[in-house]
Image 1: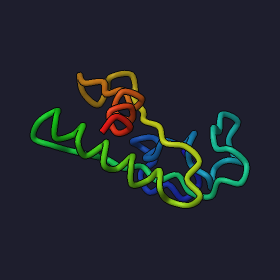
Image 2 (image 1 turned 30 degrees about the vertical axis):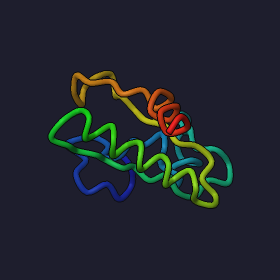
Image 3 (image 1 turned 180 degrees about the horizontal axis):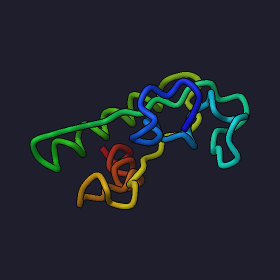
Image 4 (image 1 turned 60 degrees about the vertical axis):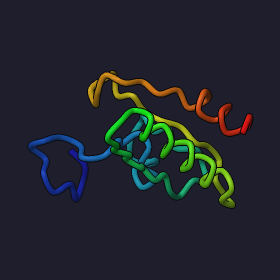
Length: 97
């Protein structure tokens, strides 16, 4: 349970390893020095193709933003659904078109 967490009974409400404000407070932080923000973007769609298209557009747009160091995705051990979308595959489709 982290200081200021509103609902400690449900556990951490964020992917704490990627939370810049916790970098110096936890041992398992994965936030590089100097990084001040790691937005988490959730994409929902009616079909898998809709989600992939949205992800391609989001990656292309984000990659053009000044200061973006990395784009990645979490699978959370399959807890969020049965689909696994590989970002490198989507990115390569962007480059070909």
